[in-house]
Length: 150
Image (cartoon, rainbow, N blue to C red; front, side):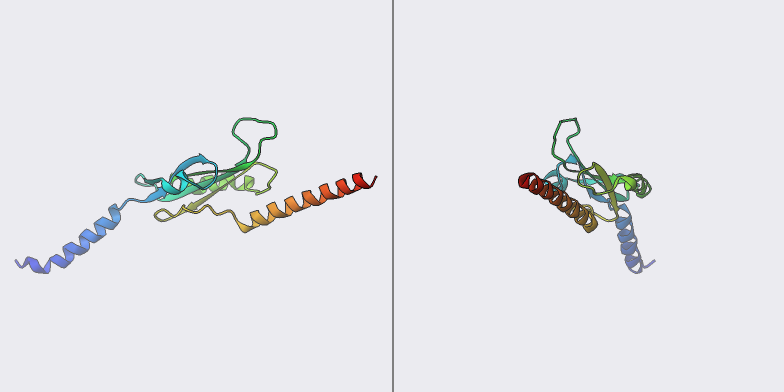
């Protein structure tokens, strides 16, 4: 038998197996203050069946109660099954308000190797935060003006 004709078939088979066996990778971190350092440098090879990268963004004060604590972003990233990722995203949807003076949580799912490098906070969130801050400053200015003019 002439095995030279089988080589192209063997090569195609090996390429197919290699792509099926290639591991999916995601950036991983837990409750980091912003999308920096560990969230941008730590990569994990996901387990079999974990076909998505899950990113959770939380805006709030420190995990323990502290009077007057400043609010900040907390970022968590991990591997997840697509179904679980979408379930978590749906669970967080009512709390994904982007209102700067309230605590909120949002999540995002993506497919593909290392697709969760960037944390996307929608432009609507930025607009909401800026307009809320502007409204607060205007109110404070009006109160200050009325106090000074009295």
